[in-house]
Length: 558
Length: 55
Image 1 (cartoon, chains in turn green, brown):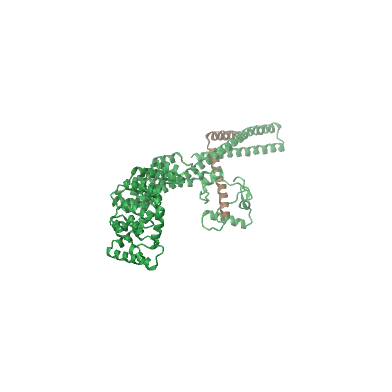
Image 2 (cartoon, rainbow over the protein chains, first blue to last red):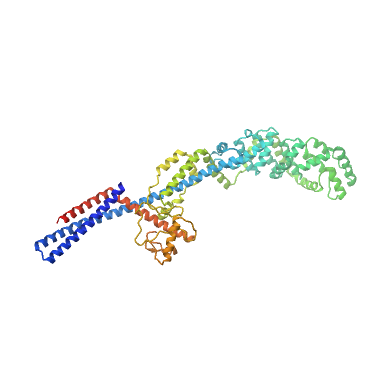
């Protein structure tokens, strides 16, 4: 109703103004007639006075019309600015909702990632993520991250077979230790898991043993990473064969590597020496051929005691210098010891260098044997789990992931997503947000909202979100609509969009031959048709050819 | 394709501005003070027209 009244007011004024002009013309004609007909001066003067009076009054009224036109123009520009402001704020909402969509997308992704990694349902994954988030302490924990903890938990699941045998806290501690020792999570879990399951050690003791083993390896000049790989390769066979505890096996691996041997060499030697009859026979054969006095009895005894490294040492000492053996002698050496000539020679060279490192290695061995937890803690605190950059990345990831777990209920997220879709749909349908934002040179689409801030907002809950939307209701622009995705739509009530007299056309996409049967394409066909008829097409007074060549920006478009 | 995008974009801006201008004008006319003044001026025209018709 208001719309009709408003139009009626303006139309009524225009109608009355036109009527006045007609009446004045009529009186002017009558006055002319009076003069031509030679009417009395009184009649002529009376008509002239009527006209004079009318001229004066119409001048006054037209002055008022001019005033009101100026005021309308001012109000017009005020309204225009306000509309543009509203439209750009709608653009901001669109940008925010986009960010929210991506935040919810992130929550969904980590939930799905946890579910897939651990082979559990989404609900269980949400619970697991919450447990991990507790350990991340809102980004205060920077030595590891959710992915690493999850990976460690997955490995633990494989080793322990039962999820109640480990916790997120244990996984976090182990993930940090593995970072500090620079060993893989898989190796760390396999070793500590075996220490727990086979040796009956606690999770904490097993983790400490790992740190002390690294210390021992360092003291002996052995690469710990290589030790871990060897245990990973032959540890299971060696443990089954020797019946040795995991802790002792780690020490044996370090010691045998120090001597230039591997766990498999210890097994080969033991198999040879413990075949007593065969061993004595091949020992005699070796002595006859080389003229040496090798005796492996002590080595055999050490093997039986489980002192594999010392047994290997004894074998090496017994065979002595083997650098000048012939082919038959080398063959008899291998038969007697189970070791190749090359391995024994390497070991001899290494033994010469090893004497100097004896003292420091003794201290480390003692600490390892004792399971010195205090030393393990000190050693671990000296090592860095991450680089500075990794620490920053972990802090960011952990804040993000911790926040993400706060809103992990898929049902709630779905409702938020639906809300966002509705708001976005409404904004897109209401106005040409993108185009208007560009018009005002405001980059509404690049509102600087980071993922963390958005996640924080989302985690406040659905209620807060809905509240925010209702407060920031988009403006109700009912006229010209331009699709924000580049598509062009112009609609609205009749007369709501008025073209200048120079404007002839409405054009859109398809100049590049993109095809399609959209309204835009149809409009463009009209353009092409008009151009082919040699018609001059103008956009706000600028020829379309000029627009397309970008030689000039049309008036009213800048 | 670039030409297509440029033309579409420019025409998009053009019509967006047109649309906003049209709407702004409507809103301006909807201002109660302006409406009141329009009615008053119309009444003055009516009065003048009546007098002119009588003469």
